[in-house]
Length: 142
Image (cartoon, rainbow, N blue to C red; front, side, top):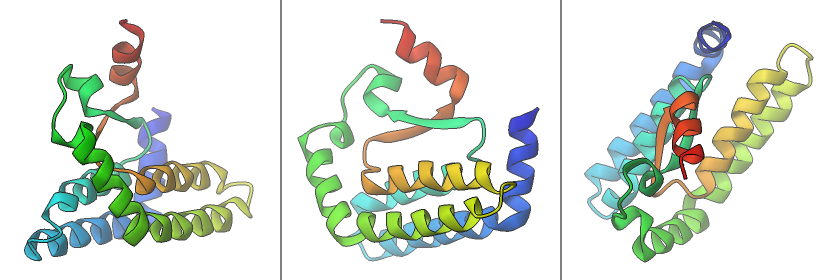
């Protein structure tokens, strides 16, 4: 229930605009053809930014049990390129937003969500958004 309330407040106070921004970035990356490998990651961040409460990110190979191009060495290389050109700068933006939220006591939960998003913006390739309960089951099974 708290996740629903947190997502409603997040949505009403700007989360929808951040998610739409990430979605637009993914569309622009896909159109450019060169950015196509990073477009999927932008869409993952958009999904996570849209409803962050009650969700978390895990590696796709943990989710599916199989490696793919995003969880291989190519994914690592893609994350390095992403970090240099976009990830570092986007993370700074989310960190600044987090501190702006945390200035008020009421905004601390939303500040934490910005920090979670900042962490994924550093290396999003090979990640998937799942409910927290599913992630706990997957990480505790082995």
